[in-house]
Length: 357
Image (cartoon, rainbow, N blue to C red; front, side, top):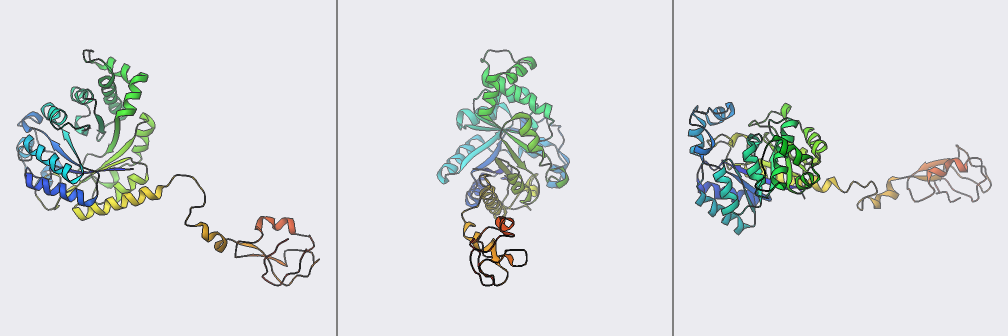
């Protein structure tokens, strides 16, 4: 079953009540998981770090990342209440950590069993290693990355999953772990890759869904898609191309202030996306080419049989002029046409009678 993650991210704008409303909307839309972002702004960015261009455009103000992110923090206590609310509804809670303090909280306080490594942290080897050493299932987003960078991160993860805690980290050790049978087995057991385009909203020309195939062939790991495009076309298309997981930003109102609202779905659109994904998931089928149960009854109606093109007396030689091929399809197969040519009719037929030679 395709796993669908509704990415609330920071679309709560730092308001716990809004975060609760986002959980309710995700649950009503029928997603499997609602995901947030956990961070301390002081641990994440310097006070002078500039906003990305999309953040300035989408928020309508130019300020430091620190100022923007400080308003978007949720307290650890709020997280505890949010996960309790998710449990009461029966929807899974997930959050992405952006600093080690937040990662420790997610693993040791919230007891999360699945973690996501965001695209921006893919090359942060110590942080990637900290994720791997938790032993949790890892969803690894690959926005902005080359294949070499993805492989390097997988090497860190393989090391973290298989090496003793006192083993010395380093590039040689990472590649040795990645190349080992144990490392590959650990990656196959714990890691899902996400193709992603890190722009909000992502332009269609840069989506590059075929890169999912590249990731799958290169690393032989499950591959999903984290979508930042507008609308629902691309995530549904990604499922048709084989994505095992879809992550999509959503908001209660795209007109709200904040960096990610404009690249997010509203609740009714999220529900429509979920239905589209589930429909495509059903439509993909089992890959076995054969008559499907719903169409078997139509074979006799749609296919054709050999019939008499005119009245035929018994013993008349059958030829192209007195043979025809017409519906229904419950008589002699047209494949017998050449066998009958030049043979005497064993029976008499009226025009349009099904042949039974």
